[in-house]
Length: 259
Image 1 (cartoon, rainbow, N blue to C red):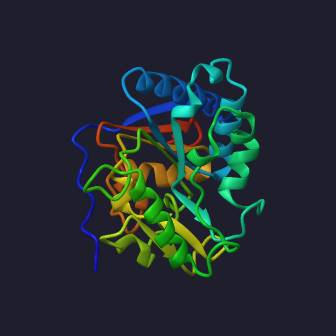
Image 2: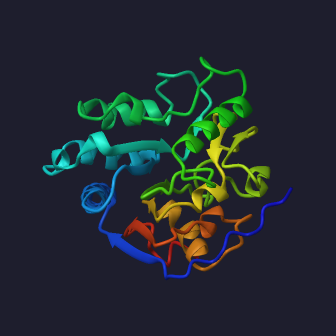
């Protein structure tokens, strides 16, 4: 079944440009602390979807050393992932492993049961089985009638090809419908086996933050913000229900590099 194109956001995307990748990571960390504190002032629990990648992990490391880190009530935070490499738990290439080293291991207040990693090869045999188990985990924390929690923050990195999570240009995963997760085979970016949230799950986020740095990302940033077709630039299709932020460095925002 082919997925319908995600609905257009009812609000404008806000593009925030920082001088370089290092400043960008620090700014994302500060913004995330503020968002968590703001949400916790009105409701709990808070659901956050983490991303991997160089800037994504640097942002988590910046959060680990942020002076306001412990002002957050981490006992009321649930952490998820937008995608994962289908590798064994603890593999250094897993987004989860890198996130634990950068941030989670520095948060003794964070309950282990509030960390929701995607099952790896040590737990299941195929990406599809992993996706099914992850879908069940998501559903357990979702409101009645929903497949996933209403994520308070969805962090997404973006590749030079415009992919987000493990939704790649021209890949069959772009058209998966009716389920919140999917197994990925033949990923153009190694490793070939992955698990990803689908567009339908990504659309459940209140706030979506796309984080990108480097001149090699500039063409994809320009294409996504220019309304490219999702099959060519998947990042063009993501939007939060309340707010969509594009957090980029100056190199990724360069219009001359985008030509």
